[in-house]
Length: 299
Image (cartoon, rainbow, N blue to C red; front, side, top):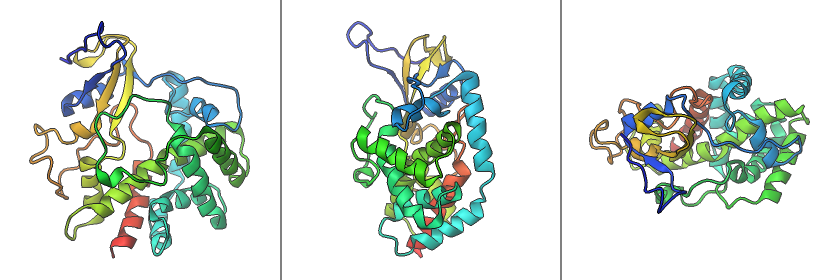
């Protein structure tokens, strides 16, 4: 049973859930949905993009938009993406941006414009997520400085989206929302995965094990927000905002032996890619891109 905050004293505070089993149960519960965002008419602004992607939608709208994203991702070859990320990362001045470069080209940007597209995505990504509750816990030092984690600048973000649209050939709005959403969601998360994996204090190990343990130990997405539209699992009442502390769940001592120790080779049961009806649709693509970059830098 989730304990409720004192609503009289702290009416705006969400319920924070941090135990692995409870977080997993709530991720799978259809009574929890993402907080609503406005849906303005089409314009080349990040406000429009947020309202046009599947990530911030629910019900049939979410299902249709997610299916469109899954369809695009299904046409990508993760082996080719991994190989191209490996090739580009060697000697690259910002290897953490290589995954976005490679993905942008795979989604239709000309190869010679990949770096320009990555910079456009890096400009729009910080403003892509709607205003949220402050993080549950401070990020570790390895996550503190990032070229894609600057404070949101709406004007720069809108300019980044306009530039990205141009580089993609100005697709129709529904298609642009799918492509730009995939790139924006991949940008900071994959960059942090690469950075944290490279910073990990570990000996030689398969890159797959390194990435899996990095995702558990230092997840790039540390918490997820949900709203209960009706009575939910774990005693969460309707109308409650819930903050799912993925970082804490990934170190739950009831699930992970010696959870604070970085130990590649564990069973990859982390919740970083989500669970239930809204898992990350691009898991295999993100891992392929990150693996290519990490392999190139560590060799």
